[in-house]
Each structure stands twice: as structure tokens, then as C-alpha cells.
Image (cartoon, rainbow over all chains, first blue to last red; front, side, top):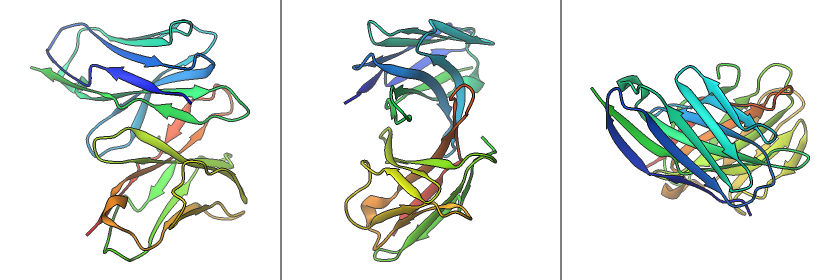
Length: 113
Length: 113
């Protein structure tokens, strides 16, 4: 059974800092890994998708890496802004004929102006 | 993602009533996944459906919960005789056919009073 852990659970940083969010998973037989952003009371917004054959993906100030062998992914946010404040979720899709995604419990980020 | 439509966005039910949550996947998609997010917890898989078929319901509570995805119309998640513990956000999602990116609806927030 896949288990996904995100550390830290909460993070507060001053504006402008670069920061790293961590995600670890127990079963390395994954199909892909996706990072989402969730704002309070809202749905999920997809940020980055990394296929199992890939090592990293980049979008703007965001960079996500994947190391399947060690069961880890990191989300790097450069030059953080107050608008980045949200909960960031890591979701791992297991290999198989269809996807059943396992979510981490998230990192709640607050960027202080 | 605006392509996955859920309604209602907010639903209030008294204990013992029935709750019906609806999800229409993106155009051209014939499958949906339902997830539940309890307060302060991560999203948990509930059920995976294709048109007229339940593929995997391993995450569904054994009693009071049921799901369907008819040939015509939206997928319905039904909760009978709701209890306070059913209060949560319920999300549905579909997956892209090209890169398997997940697309989530905005969710239905169920409050049982």
C-alpha cells in the first residue's frame, strides 16, 4: 500500500525566500507524481506533473524533481511571493491499468510580505 | 480545472437526510474518480467509475455510500442517512488521455448539521 508523506506540515517564510517542499513515498513503482496547490475552501490546481521516466519538471518559478529509487520528490519555489501562500499537495499515481492516486497531507505555506 | 464540473459547491444536510453530489467530467472523458477530504486530512480515494461500471470502490465506506455513472448525465455520489462525520469536501477528477495529468473539480463541501 502506497503511503505519501510531506514535510514540513507547515512553513512560514518571508517574501523573496527560496524554499523547498518535500514529499516521500514508500512504493517506488509509480506511474507519475503530481504537485497541486489548494487554496482555502477551493479545489486543486495542478502545478507540475512528473512522469516516472522523468527526473524533473519546471514551470516559471517552480521546479519539481523526482528520485524514484529513494522515494522522494521536492518542489522548489524560487523568490516566494505572498500569492504563493496555499497548501501544496503531492500526489502519487501507482502503476497499473488505471490510476489510483495517493495524496500526501500537504504542506501549508505562508509567505509573509 | 473548469472542465470538471461539480455541483452543488456547498451542501448542508441535517443528520439522517440524503446527500447527492454530482460530477460531470471533461468533455470526451468517460471516467471519474471520487475523493474525500476530511478536515485537516489528506484526500482519500473513494471510487473509480467508468460509464455504467464501477471499476474500483475499495475506498468507499461499506454502508450508506454509493456511486453511479449512468450512460447519460453526471456521476452521482450518494450518501444516505448522513452523519456529522460525513462533513467533508468531496472532489471528483478525471485524467488526461495524453499525459495522464489529473484534473479536479472545485469540490462539493458537505456540512451535516
